[in-house]
Length: 253
Image 1: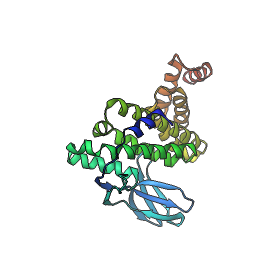
Image 2: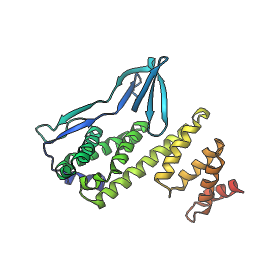
Image 3: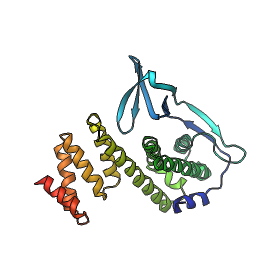
Image 4: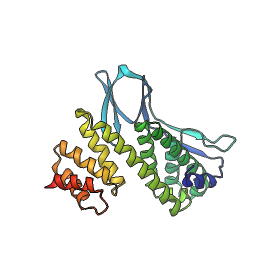
C-alpha cells in the first residue's frame, strides 16, 4: 500500500454527518462502459454529454443501457460512521457544505478524507486494469476537489494535501499519455489524442516522453506552434535521453 494511503487511513476517525450531495450525469453503455459529465441535450436519436477534457460528444441511444441524471439529494452516514453514497458525491457535497459554513471543516474532515481515499483507490484500480477513461474521470474529480482551498484544511494540512495532489496529477498524466498514444493510432481521433497529451504535459511538464508524443501528434494535426515548442523543450533538456534528443533536434532543423 502506498505511504500516502496508509497516512490517509490513519487520519480517519469517522463521524456521523449529513452531507448534501450533487451527482454527475452518466451514460452507461450496453458494453459496460460508463461516461460521466453533464448531459446537455437529446436529439436525432442521440444524447450529448459534456466531458471536462474532450467537450461535448454525442452517442447513439441504441447502444445505451441506461442514463443516470444527477440530482441534489442528501445522504447520511450509517451506524458504522462510513459516509453513504459514491465517494465523488461525498467529496463534492462536503465542499459545497463548507462553502456555506466554513466552520464545519473540522467535523467534516474525516468523511472527506475517507471519500478521497476511496476514490483514489478506485482510480488506481481502474488504471491498473486498463479502464483508462473511468480512471481519468475519477482522477479529474479528485484533482478538481483538491484545487479547492478548503480541501487543505479538510485533509489536515498543506504537507499531506500537497503530496496527494502530486500523486493524483502524476497518475492522471500517465493515464492521459496512454489514452493519447492509443487515440493517435486512429486518424479520426488525432484531435482527441492531442487533448489528452496536452493535459499530460501540463500535469507532468518534466516528462520528456509526454512532450515528444505531444509534439508528434500536434505536428500531424498541423499545429506547428505546439509541435515546435514541444520539440524544442525536449531538444534543450539536459536530461533528455540521447535518442529522444536527437529525434527532437532533427524535427526542429
